[in-house]
Image 1 (cartoon, rainbow, N blue to C red):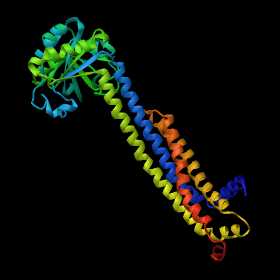
Image 2 (image 1 turned 180 degrees about the vertical axis):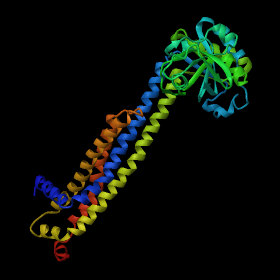
Image 3 (image 1 turned 90 degrees about the horizontal axis):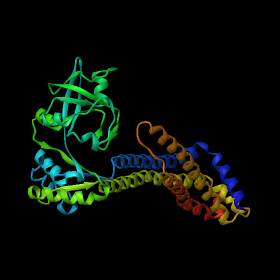
Image 4 (image 1 turned 120 degrees about the vertical axis):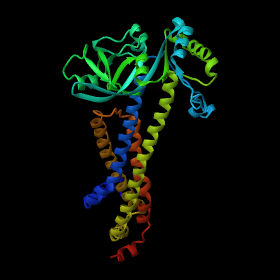
Amino acid sequence: MNLVESFRIALRALGANKGRAALTMLGVIIGVAAVILLVAIGSGVQQEITGQIEGMGSNLLFVVPADISAESGGAGGGAMGAGKSFTLDDADLLERQLGGDALVVPILQGAARLKAGSHSMRAMIAAANQYGSEVFTSDLVYGRGYSRSEYITATRVAVLGATPAEELFPGQNPVGREVQINGERFEVIGQYAKQGGTLSGDQDNRVYMPLTTAQRLLSVSDISVIVAKAEDPGRIELVKHKIRQALRPSFGDDITVFTQEQTLGILSTLLGTLTVMLAGIAGISLLVGGIGIMNIMLVSVSERTREIGIRKAVGAKTYDIMSQFVIEAIVLSVVGGAIGILIGWAGALALKTWIPTEITWWAVTLAFGFSAAVGIFFGVYPAWRASRLDPIVALRYE
């Protein structure tokens, strides 16, 4: 009996038990769809974060008051663990030492309660000096950003993100109006356009103000982090060296300076590993689906023992019996894999509205190839068992 005939008989056998075949394929369908969907989410998030970092430019350096290198045992082993933190004096020192090589932006964040008229809400304070808008690119819908004189005098002025502007002043231009922030009155001088979520959270649900103003409002003297933007990307290593030299008298080696490339490399490695882990977890369901195929095929061999005996009695060879059952298992896994690809693909496209997803060909190929391999691997034993049945014993089976 040739392969075409075996294929035809296998399809006829599966068609006689449509419900069982559908349930058998369900494990493979779920496994393949899960692999494609989870990898699409992982890849989409990785591309989104990578794009955000690259969009900030390749000439940014982030300075934190702790040695968080692997050799130091993590963030707890450096200056951060000792309770030291940056102040405005450190930022001013860097600004003097770097001169025209880089813009220096101290950053402070904190929680805020905003109120305007009968409207109130919670938001995050994002405070910096007058160079903040130059380092972190953002578009103004109305008004302007705060000036150097307002930063020096700690003037109570604020620029609203898109969310506070819409909730506190719906359908209005907020510029020139008054808003209470943590109980103190501020004049609104601008509104930023929608930016969406980024690595540092929801950029729209923020209120921006001079850092000196935020320090008075929050009753703190520390700052969260210092960002430096090198004027020439080719001199970024020189700027990094100057930063370390300037802060060494106060912090020693207990500081970390991240470049954009380092941040991107670390995050890409972490997200890549996470994506592979997600694919591996989803792949477990494919193994479960394969075991389901083997179980159903073993049941099928038991139910069709008499049929196998008749076929062997009329001249069917061991290869013919074995090929038929292997083909049945492969058809179940391949058809299930194809349906799983369609469901996973459709799910990834549907989720794109809320979550960044990116369908990758390697995930589709891997999932489909694995589902086909599952059919072969888990179909061989039932097929071998069927082919080894003694025709005389099989004919007596009731």
